[in-house]
Length: 397
Image (tube, rainbow, N blue to C red; front, side, top):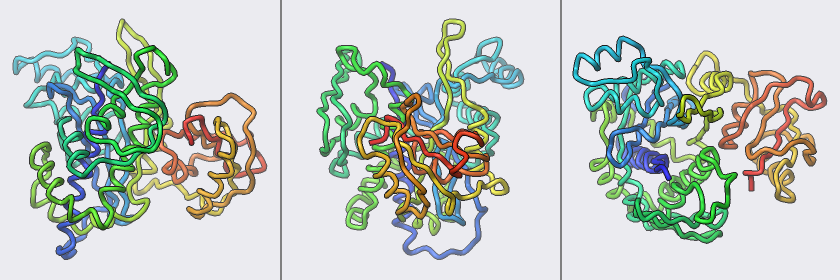
């Protein structure tokens, strides 16, 4: 079972932001930063050789929002010939044709070129210019969860897996409970059970579980009555586990803007869409580049921001397995200011993710931000009586 450091990386990221938030209370706004500050978080594996987790982020200082989008580590990329030549000159090597998984770019680049080449590869993949990077090791996750006193979380189903070779023991019963560091690690690393059940639970599903845990972690640690108590934890974690090109002077400039992230809905997580395919004996992830372009435009490009769906008629359909799901989501969307024209049951093929059917690519990104792992589909004829159709997936509870 491969390790995933998604939650390790993200929890560390937000600990750093929490430190800045606390400090910002006494910092005056003395300059006007660029509207968007783009950065990448690399979560390295146990040997600190590969970037098992990559999170592309954007701090929007005007909208007071932080967006994070996870990039699948197995995404197939091609390292350009000029970079491979530099590595060869320095006694390193990469595949002759340059084809590799995205998380291998850091490995082939090594300590000297790894972060730089990984940043360039991600920029070429997404079109996003990245200013800062941070490298985080996986010890942060257990440390933080334990030091803040655990995190309350609703475990979706029984998680039971044992691997003595990894010294890994996951034993979690379903239901709402407080998870310590070891239990939380089991939650975010779980991929399959001892008896082979839950075959439908893929890496894409696991990413959604990780995002839900992330939201609980941040919400609970950023509450007013927890901030001062947890301050030393965040400071210690930042010192122990983060390597970055963001200098102390840079961080000080952004302090006043970090405090706004404590507001409800200020932190938004997103997942890329794609599929896994076996090629030349290797499993690779291939991204839906049209969907990726839509996400990038909506999050990172100030001149291509998508139109809000506020004021449009939304048809909510229950494509999941829980009774009353559409009605509950109607209330949820209305509480966010959206207009739900009607609800109903979906009679087509059910998916494990939520679909947002729009008539034009300019709409849907603000709804997508509310449903991690959801996908936007453009189809002007599918629901002619409604502006947008929201088909809830089986992953929604």
